[in-house]
Length: 108
Image 1: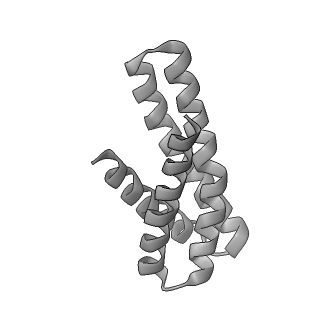
Image 2 (image 1 turned 45 degrees about the vertical axis):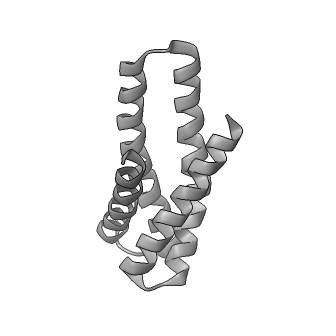
């Protein structure tokens, strides 16, 4: 399990880092994205792992993914705001784009 969680974290960091760099042209923002992902990705994936192992319910797992991804979106936007003092709309947009990209690539 742990190797799968580590792989998910690494892939998220790589995908979102590239997207953030393309979006902002800023290494600082890539760093902020890295910090956010070091917090939110393991937290979400551990919750999903617990749900998968202890409930076995595919519908509950899918619902947890949807709720978790939305929570990550808002948490990361707030963290960006705290780290950068940028306006919340810009932080939310960057969180939406980077998380959307990693979710879609991961889904495919």
